[in-house]
Amino acid sequence: MRTIARSAVESAHRSLDQLGETPLWCDKERVLWWLDIEKPTLHRLDPATGQHDARAFETQFLGSLALAGHDEKLIATDLTLNRLAVDGTLDPMLEVDAGLDNRLNDGRVDPSGRFWVGTMDNQLHRPNGKLYRIDADGTAHAMIDDVIVSNGIAFSPDGGTGYFTDTRRHISWRLTIDPDDGAIIGREVFADYSRTGDRPDGATIDAEGCLWQAFFAGSRIVRYAPDGRIDTVVEMPVTNPTCLCFGGPDFRTLYVTTARKFLSDNQLAAEPLAGSLLAVEGIGQGVAEHRFVFS
Image 1 (cartoon, rainbow, N blue to C red):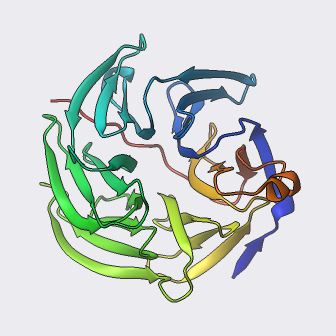
Image 2: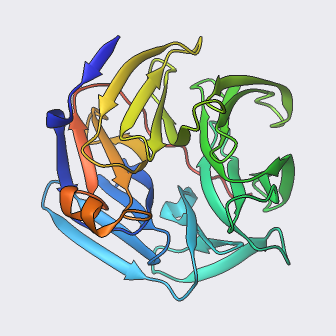
């Protein structure tokens, strides 16, 4: 097994995020987008120039973020999924879990252009959440229920395999998906941390079809081979890595969002990079993010 020391991890931007999440590399713009869910802010960084822009939103929480056609984006505010136009206009598309103390959380577009997004319980213990599939016509289909905190959504390059995590159940599943209609035709436990209490969080897939996953409160990232074997561990200089993606012109930079949430003053003093966007160079080969396709 390969171990990457924390000395290989660098700061890409000191954003001081309370709950940094959902990093996405846009291959057209060659910039990185990510969220601070709890502040709630949308960040944009051009690594070539160092230019950083931030937009605050008038909502309690931001949630998911995805690239879409026409250079637009999908962005979640509380329980509403919105279409974010190039000019910054926010157009609500749909609402899920109405009436529940939930919010939208992790999401990702599959190779067929469908957006998969999960909800989570704001109290972090009730199984009120669901995993949804959003089709091109804007309809939402509940695919998995009885979820506490949705996370770790990722897809194999051919779209036939998906991954989904319930962080507060400490379990990740491998899903068999029909690429044609998006139906889940099989589900099995991929990684079970219910005995140790480890918290698998956001994830991404590399060019070899391996799953990279951050561990909240675990100070590490791991890479799983398709058979579930861990072959790489990246030691992080922060307690709370949250999510990750590959980016850069050649998709060889692993970007990692982090969180200051739940850390004491003493921990924050000992972790100056907590809440920063971090980067690790040359440890894997990523692929471009898929874009949501509007009908």
